[in-house]
Amino acid sequence: MARMTGVIPLVLLASAGLAAALAAPAQQTSEAPLMGETGAELFKTYCGSCHGRSAKGDGPIAEHLRSRPPDLTLLGKRAGGKFDADKIHRIIDGRNPVGGHGGSDMPVWGDAFKRSGQGGTEESVRARIRAIVEHLRSLQVLPASGVPPAPPAPQSVSGGRASDR
Image 1 (cartoon, rainbow, N blue to C red):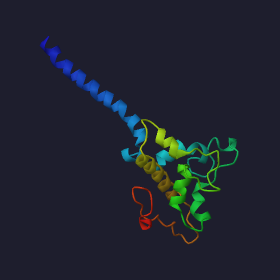
Image 2: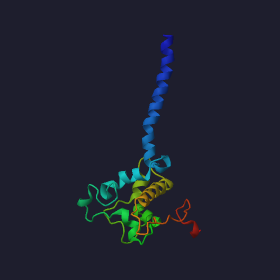
Image 3: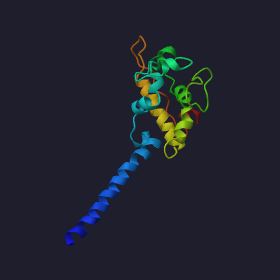
């Protein structure tokens, strides 16, 4: 019986550890980039079905949409070699629309991320969208000059450019 007494606390401790491990994925959903989920993973999960894994607008449901999703690898090239991270961020967020961009077929990801999992904070919403934007930057087709699009200006936590303060 003495041996069983020592086993019970060990079983309880192992059960508590398992419960904590099972709860972790739910938290990771709402705080993804803060918890280590990459822009590539977020893009694959939230954008890939329409834009395709390679971001060329060839996702499995693309042909069923009213308008075909754009090739996101050409964003910088179509903008004269400049990748406008702020504009891309606003398009993905969708809560402050950019005229002529991000049609009605595109979800308002800012709201979706805010409501996801256990409820995202504004900081986690911005972090997730920023991670997707940086992933898109990494996929850009280089202009003929071979120089990658310029990185964005430093931003404050509130999302505004440091130069705007």
